[in-house]
Length: 116
Image (cartoon, rainbow, N blue to C red):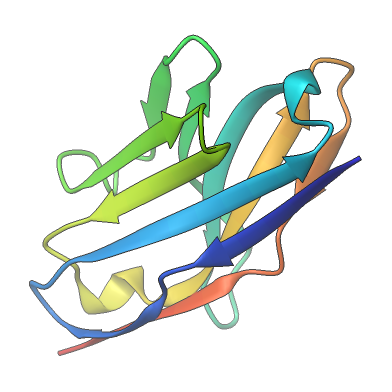
């Protein structure tokens, strides 16, 4: 099993920046892809960004050029650097780990609130 703990959320003004962290523990060597997803009130959870063990990244169109996903394998941590934040980025951000065998795990989420 994999345990994921997110941190770094908070309240920020529009145009500001935040960095989210997701620390993984447990069966970390079985993880293939890690990613960030978000869920705004009344909306479905959506992909924000993913990163593979090889470092390949993928971003939602809405965050391209503003958000950067990265991973520190030595610390078993994935980061999401969020710049030029907009009120529509307000959501609970979740970390996800996908294992090679297809199993996936979610963190409990961290709230990001962007004020206008």
